[in-house]
Every structure is written in structure tokens, then in C-alpha cells.
Image (cartoon, rainbow, N blue to C red; front, side, top):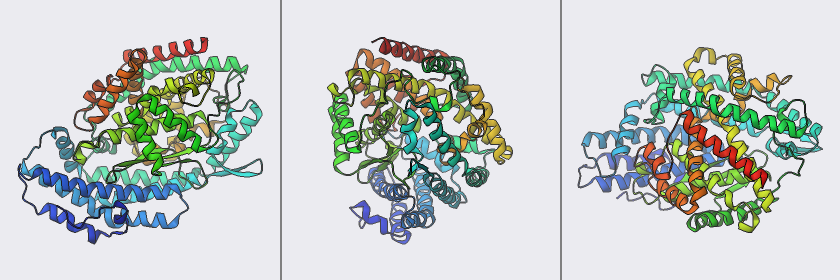
Length: 567
């Protein structure tokens, strides 16, 4: 056993590499055989869990308050002083296990992943990874500092979102334009960071012996079950099946609003002139409603959420200097998740919390697996866990079922969710296709104006139905405002694939809610012990890229929207 490791993960936050390194040396010096492998893996898991939690807690502190210089310095120190040694230590332990020839039961897929990771590891990439994460800190600081003055008050860009739902079209336009001008003011700063990101990534791929960064990243993301060509096939299916459906939705909205053309500030307002859905005023109300919903979905899942609320593992409200977006991170040594969000009182915030809670439930459900390698799951199924939860929770949005709304408001919220889910696929295709272009054409992509032109071309291909005339500069720089492109390259097609899986699970739930939830939880509990298609199959879905499967999902969604509108 690794005597001397702290029992409380928080104690590790003060440790230096010189204090951590002996534990790696201890594991490396042990004899390894079928008789000793389980103790070896258990101790390796304990050490890796502590270090992962250390990194995640230090990173979280930088986004909870991007103006906290101390938090930034502590995270930078980790990246520069501890992460390089830990990465090298993990690599040596992988090589040790692989060289031993020992293959523990239930470890086939983890061993395949380990072989891939060991094969692409290069010591020269360790400091580059730290530089990449340091650039991510700078990107988050730029975005989180974006505020504007609105009606005499300084507000963040997300805090303007409720205005986009108001009936006054001129007021919506003023707010939207104010946000757009503020974001464009950081155009050069983001361009500068972008060029540094690309240079680092090209060097990483070259160091690892790959012809381009996409080939390297495909292995780094352990994508064994699909190829770039599958992604292109998915894009074509979206263009064939979803883009026409999206055009129908936009045209209906334009007609109901009675406007000549649909403008970007017309996309969030209720087309029938009803007041905006305001499910909560305080985040405590958001927590309470979400808890009631989860208990209706499954009491065990509700219990997980209540535990997180009791232990302060939810930070949901938007505020100045809080990093952008929403995510669920893991504290594996503490056996807990943490949810980060920027809620401002919208129905989207409800959907976001349902989504991130699905990630949290996934972590809880796979904690029974003894080794961290078995608990590692690709984003393609991680996102099924989150997106399927959004759909599985839909029957309980009404207050009478524990949620937030009257029955009519709940139906309206379901329609909004289904419409936004449909409209998401074309946007996902833009983001994913853009990234393929970037890393297929790295020299051109180094010049941001080429990126602007390519984004505009893809936007015009997939995003039909909204009039951007006079707003071309805002439209073509949309790639700057999608943080996945900058911080997590090639992490976006997963959302599209997962949403297709989630819609299939929801389709099952329409005839058997309890059975669908049971299959969903059973798949979550498999962790990373089986291939991706098997995870989908266990959950009651199929990993798919084709027009036929996508078409069935779109028809179900459109039919449900129509039936809810009629009701």
C-alpha cells in the first residue's frame, strides 16, 4: 500500500512534485505478476484519483473567479511543476503493465486504450500540454471579463440573455447588438491566442510522428469506433435531413412573429407573444425543482443530486469574472462530481442543469468499478448520459409532477427543448466541419481571416432561415465564440452523436419510461469496460451516422412538437 498518501484530497493541494514522485517510484519498483496486479492497480488508482482531483480542483478555482490571481498562480504551478512529472510517471506505469503481459479480467478495452496512449506519448509534448492549458486560462479570462452597461448597470454577456426573450423587438436588437460589439472588441486578442493554440498543436502532432493534428487527436481521444469519414457522412445526413426541418421551424417562427425576415434577435422570443418562461428567480429554486424532477425520474438519481446540494458541489449562478459555459468535473478521490453553471433564470438553465446532472449521475453509477482505467469513458457516451437525462426528465417539468411549470408551460418548455435540439444538429455540423477544415489546412487556418471565410461558408451551408444581412462580421467570427474550438479541439461531434442516441432512448421512454431509465442506468454503470457501440446498445440505442436513423429521430421530434402544440 502507498503509506503516506493523504486521506483527505484537499491536503494534496499543497504538495510539491518532490513529495508526490516517491509514490510513482514505489509502484514502478514493484514486481508485477497475475498475483500482484490487483494490488498494483488499486494503488495506482488511488494515486491517479488524488492527482486528477488535485488538478480539477485547481482548475475549477480559476474559473469560479477568473480574477483570482492566487488561484491562477496555483494552477500554473501545478501545470509547470507537477503535471509533467505525473504524465511521465503515468506513462512509465502503462509501459510497465503492458510489458508484463498480465491482462486482468475485464481489462481488454482499458488495455487497448493504454497501448494507444503509450504509443503516442512523447516527453517533448509534456511542456507543450502545459502551455496549451495556460493559453486556455488566458482565453477564459478574455471571455469572462466581457461586460456591458445596460440600463445603468454593468452586466455580463450571459445576463443579457433574458432580454432576448422580451416582446419588444427593438429592445431585443439593442441588447443583442450591444453584446455583439463587446465580443468583437476582443477579436484581435482571441486571434492572437488562436495562432498560439494552432502552433502548439501542430508541434505536438509532429513530435508524435503524425502527419497532422487531426490524426494525432483522433488517437489521443481514443476514437476506435469511427473515422473522420464517418463525421463527414454525419454532416451530409444532417444537411439532407435536419437542415430542411430547421428551415421549416424558422419559417413557422417568422410567420408567427409577422416579420419580413427572421433576425438573430428573433430566435429566443416566444413566437405567440406569451411572456417568457421564468422557471426560477433564485438558484435555490432551481436546485429544489431539479431535485424533485430527478426523484421522479429515479429515486436513486434524486439522492445523488441531493447529496451534491448538501455538500456544496453545485455552483450555478452567473456573476462577473466567472468563467464561461457549464460543465461537470470529477473529484474521483472524494468520489464526487461538481457542477459549474452560469444560470440567469431561463428555461435553458433548467435544461443545462438536467444535462450536467446526467454527467454527475454517470460518475456516481460507475464508481463501483475498482480501477480508474475502467471508469474512463469517451465523450461520445459521456454526452449520452447528459443529453438523455434532458429527455428522460421532460415528463416531470410541470409543477404537479415536481417541476417548475403549469401543464401548458411544461408543454411549451418541451416544445422549446425539442426545437432547440433539432436546430442544434446543423450548428454542430458547422463546428465539427470547421475543425476538420482547420487541421486539414493548418497554414491557411493560421490566418484568422481565412477562418472567418470558412466559418461563413459552412454557416451558409447548414444554418438556413435566419437573415444576417448587415451582420456579416458578427456571423463570420462565430468560431471565436465557441470555446470548444479553442480549448477542446474536435470535442463537438460527440454532442451530435450523443443527441441522436438520446433521442432513441427517449423514443423508448415514450412507451416504457421505467424500462428506458433502467437501461440508461445499466449502460452508465458499464463505465469504460466495453466498446462504444455496446454502450449505446445497452442504453437502448445505436451509434449511427446515417440519414435513415437521423430521419426517424427528426420525424419523432417533429410529430411530438405538433402534438404538444395541438394539446
